[in-house]
Amino acid sequence: SPFALTVVGSGREWTMPGVEVTSKSWALVDEVADYQSLDIGLYPVRDDDWGKGKTGFKPVVYMSCGAACIASPVGGVVEFLRQGENGGLASSQQDWCDRLVDLLKDRALRERLALNARQTVLETYCLQAQAPRLLEVIQKAAAG
Image (cartoon, rainbow, N blue to C red; front, side, top):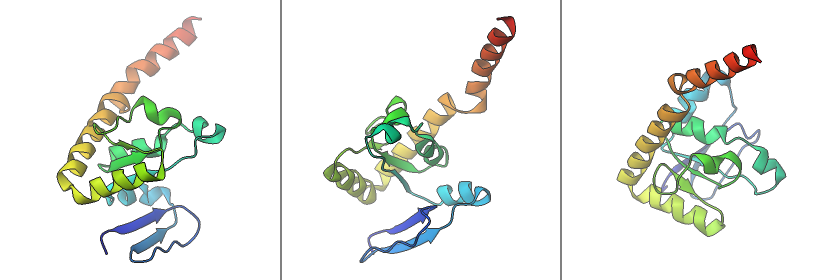
């Protein structure tokens, strides 16, 4: 098999001819370990009102856990995921195939994107980056 697929939290068993598939129930206690076990995290979302309303938290989790990420360029994802820099963006079926094949074939690319993704999370979403912003909001609310 060219790769193994792990599906977490879909609520059903998955099969794919020629691919080893593991289906897992989502559990908070396992989430970090589940995502740290991935080389590539996938986040396909439809470009509709529901998809646009999503924040893109799943790619941030993938990125923080050291997985290269491919996501639909929908909603909040476009604010932090940059094609070829810290992840991959895919709109069409061909985009998804191209991005996935590139990452499956090129370990150095996977590792570079994963390291850049982790750096993006550290610079933007970690406690040290967000605490001053939160403090500012609280101080403005208290003063107003």
